[in-house]
Image (tube, rainbow, N blue to C red):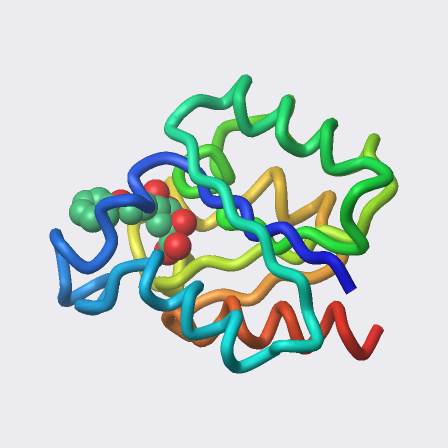
Length: 139
Ligand code: CA2
């Protein structure tokens, strides 16, 4: 099974800033550990701070990946364009948020992209990415 882990803006900073919200491990280290944990999965990953680049990457995923694990970062709360792309590509997308967006500022409570995703996992820390992979493998 081929899976793309797609991370949006500022997720490259995880582990370096705001450890009380996002923990101390970097996303790169965690994804490397995921590859060892799920050797049956072929896991690619990509991070961008740019909405259009994330849209391009989702479109390019068509015919290439069986599933996408996506943390759209702050774009979850603003981007109808990303939600449209998730609906368009016909690949299951599981949305992950490291923090519990429903217990934070009100402007984080709604996610446009989660409405288009097959599943949303929030507030389970980095482990949420592992849960998303297991969901895609067993779906
Ligand atoms: O909880 C999540 O995974 C989020 O997607 C993280 C986003 C935030 O905008 C979403 O509402 C929830 C932020 C990405 C990380 O931003 C940082 C900001 C400062 C220091 C370190 C990371």
